[in-house]
Length: 127
Image (cartoon, rainbow, N blue to C red; front, top):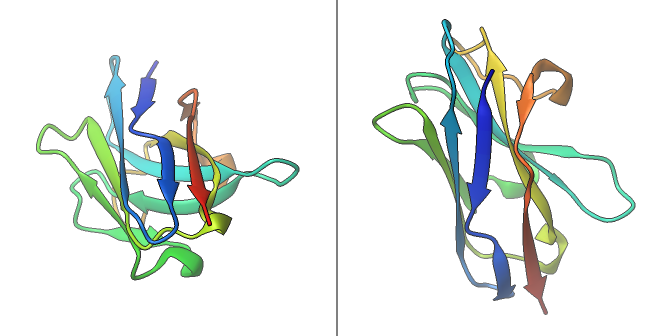
């Protein structure tokens, strides 16, 4: 079992920055990838970015490339999402997720590959 707790969301003006954090806890016997997804009202949950167990491999969706950066803490159980140049269309609830057994190689981008989810944190970007 893995528990995930996100923090750092809030209200920000367009062009501003926000840093999200996610802390993972619990006992695991395998490496895991950590990812960020987001869901806007009336829309499906979509992939944002993910990072491998070692932190050496990352992936992100095209709409956030060059603006968002995912990183992993030294202890491996924390992941961050630095979001810069925010746009109103980035407004959503952001979820942290863990993909057990998929910590090596390119981290997965499909939500069905993730086993555990946090409760989400709201990010609202005003124009």
